[in-house]
Image 1 (tube, one colour):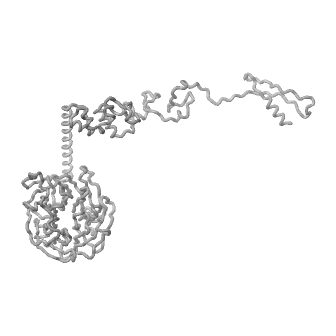
Image 2 (cartoon, one colour):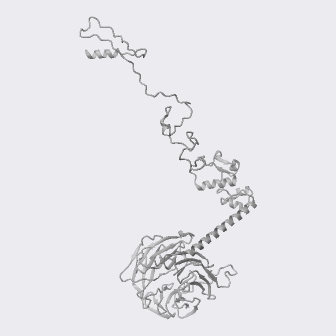
Image 3 (cartoon, one colour):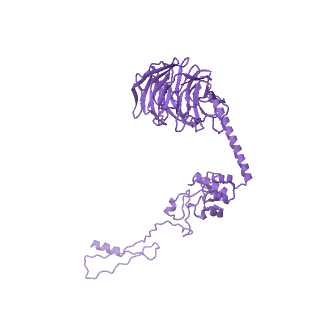
Length: 578
């Protein structure tokens, strides 16, 4: 049987005791008996050579077996031992590396002495630990990734750390300052994070040096600001106080309202005659504004490049003059509390004034001529409508060039008016493009509503009514087709077609519209110097008064005394009616 012969041959295959490369015969199994199957054949002797398999290369044993694992250098091309998979794929450690001459891995040096690595420590906590170490003599170890309750992670005076219970300078209390027998000034510095271990004399000297450095820095900033104003063409400001005393015997300033001022009546009356005339301006007066709330002062802007504020109840004279424009002043507006006001002029300068001191807080140079200005009651941001078709929003709290925080761009002509509605959350603007836009305050990319009709004319003057709550129900718009249009500002901003006031001639002039506090009367000047008064309900003309020789450009109703009105004209006079 051939298969059996092969199996027998495999079973007789063996390995010699010595591997010397010579062939050795292998003994065959005893032959079968004579009675065996005659078909079986005699098996021949088989010669064989032994084979040994070795999978690992012939390398030396790893030195220090059982000790710390050896590092494999990235530049190594030959490894003389069997590293593990983790050792081959482990990230390169640094900056110390024993495989380089200077001990620093190439590319990891970022300082002259070696490498500095960023940690997870925030800037505030880093400064806190520095100030704590300078003040109390201890700090937390930044390399220890544990909480502050373990004293082993403290660097410096551990005894002071124990007394402070691990509190830093920002967590220190007045009791801690008293323990260190420090003065109140030093304790305040410690509480403010400016603690110092200096003596009182050294601390006072250091405080003087710091104050002198701050004064020098402020003077340098003022010089740079003055240079920039000169480069931008912004003139210097001046102010003159014409009153007797800036403060009375009780410490009240001259802008404080008299305590006896109160609303006389809730019902408004039509004025009959002029009771006083202010004649301090040398050229025409373009705008007048009552002091918010009380109306005991009257602010005026004139074409003689000056802004004046007048006393209404006592001396009825000019109290202070503000000079800061090189060309006629176009518009003015008070802040909500009246302590500041803004003015714009044809010299393209926007100014933000302190009413009491006359100091110019901020000034900006606009690209176009500013035609109108308004101040938001919430954040005192100043909105300016310019001849370059844009509305600019300035934040006077920012003292840098970044104070221009928003720009409303949509008009196709000069912007004439800006009015806040809906709780001062939205604003309405009109322009020479005969359009009216409704904006969301602070969003200048696209208006909420666009009003434009073929029959519409430019509306250079808009008055909110009532105007004392920031949420007016109506907008009275002086249209250049000799009529006053009324827009409702409720849920739907739309034109009230039933109310429009006609009869006067104002074509070409931005005559201001006035409304009585009780919404009973509407008034406006005209190009002939007359003061027109209409009834709100019937829209009929009640009265016409000859007020000025020329254009009667402004007319405002007193906020508290409903029978008194102030008007201004291009004859340079401001008249007070009762």
